[in-house]
Length: 200
Length: 92
Image 1 (cartoon, chains in turn blue, orange):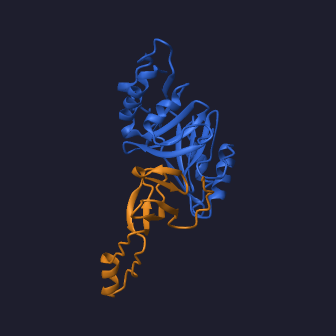
Image 2 (image 1 turned 90 degrees about the vertical axis):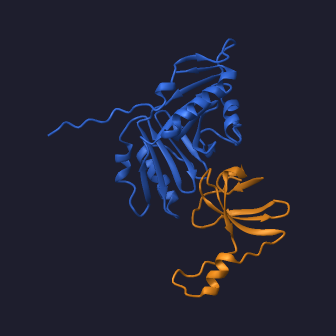
Image 3 (image 1 turned 180 degrees about the horizontal axis):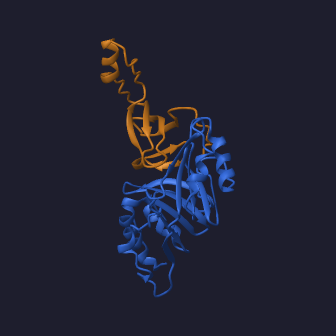
């Protein structure tokens, strides 16, 4: 029997991914851009009325205490989760295989599980000017009181749908369609030039 | 124009898609009542003032919303989920 190999994931950003400092960085780098490459990106959806049950299941499987409420989220080390629509959640893990852990836990009566690990690209923007650069892209309020730590937002940039989670006071994780990721990445690099950026 | 999505909070109108008049009553699919179908397809109140509308937050949480908009001032008077059921706490 043939040996089973996990397919090696290639980054869609690769031809445009240039580690190092770029743009106007003579006075310092104000934004750090990186691709996160998590092993698992899942979309979980609850049937109407089953939202709290699904939040409990997410807690049992991941150990994350997901707050109830619109856009509520939590991020801790290797794992993160946030609500992005009514009854729908994105769950991320650095490791592969989280879908299997959920498969037995989410019964058809509660909701559905969609594995988007190969369908989304995760980009992290961090630094003192992260809010500034994000505000040029998305028409939402990035100030900490309006967009608290761990929270998630669904919005779009020029019709490229994006899910954004705040994972630090000056750090955001952006999930975009893999097929649009390179174009989005190039735009993000251009937008970061004025403040000086480093690709890690 | 800002529309306050019950899930996402206030967002620019560019994130939303208009899905038509919210006053329409779709006949049962098997209905043979041509007057009812005609009214569903063609009859519109076209008011100068408050208007019931269906919008989708297509560039955000993708929820369908029931919106009351003033057609003269474009003021959004109310928004709610078009389909009840999801008991998610509203942000605003």
